[in-house]
Structure formats: C-alpha cells, structure tokens
Length: 204
Image (cartoon, rainbow, N blue to C red; front, side):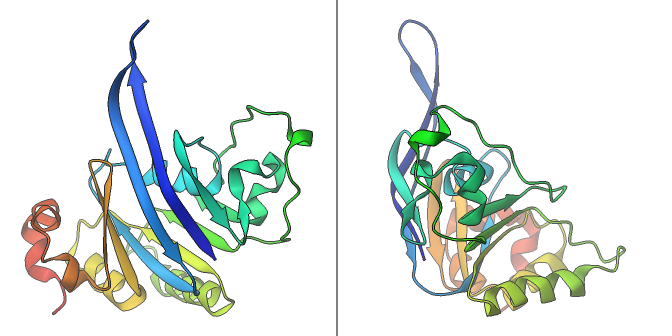
C-alpha cells in the first residue's frame, strides 16, 4: 500500500559550497490498512515526512510508492488521488510544480489510499473527539492507511493515541523509530525525554 524506500531529504544553505543543515531519513513499508501514530518534537521532520509522502516536497534520494505508483512521478493535480495531507486547519497542502505536468504519469486511483493528518486538534472542549476517532477508524475500515500526527500536551492525548493507533513512529532530529505500541516506544530514552512528565502517563 505504501513503500517509503530509503527516502532522504537534505536541507542546506550557503554558496557556492552548500552546507547541510538538516537531514530526514525514512525507510518503511505498510502492506495493510492501519492507523499510524506519529509523534516528535517541533522541527523534527514530521511535516516534511508527510510532504514527501504526498509528493509536495521533492526528496533528495529514495522514493515513495503509493498504491504501486511513485508519487513524485504522478501529475500534480492527481497526487491527492494517492495520498492526501491535511494540516492543522484541515486544508490540503499546495504542491510545488517543478516538472510540466504533461510529462508525468496519470494517477491510477480515483481517491486517496493514504490520509495524513498533521496535528488535528484533540480538544475536549470542542466536542469533536468522538467524531474524529470514528472518522479515522472509518477510513481504516475502508482499506486506507491513516497517519495521525499529534504533539501531546495532555495525558489524555496519549490515551487517545493508544486506543486509536495500531503502530507508532517517533521522529526526532530527522530519524524515525518504529514501534508497535506507545509502551514499546517508551523504552526509547529520547522518546521519554520528549514526553517529559507525560512519560509517566504512557498506558501500560
């Protein structure tokens, strides 16, 4: 369903010699419908990862295959038929057009296989938590891959992720760590450091 193959994005500055300032690396495969919880500090590369998966950011190396197609070789206006990125406001991120669209492939799907939600607002005051949880599960039940990126600042955020997600990714300084549960992820010292006092609330 989704294959992120030796993906690498390097940001650099300077002229004439470019000096790397940040590098993101990812390599994973998702073969079945699932809900993935994504966590990590601000500036760690979470949004960059989502942009690379949806094709709105060009990788330095590697590729992203979604539904059997390299998303960076699909026409810009049709990439959302493979994967869609929803930011905090739930607006779809704009694509950067660097190659004429007519030189690219047509999408083979009519609706996205992968849905990436970038820090949706899990607030107990807005009354939408139940609706959102049901929505994510419905997408998964329809055979989709769902990514839910959350920056937890309350203990109940961890409880919601533990209840909702079937696997987890922790993004820190451009590196990804994979785990089947929050509890397994909590064995990783940088993850506990990231959570701070909330580490004590990781579900057993």
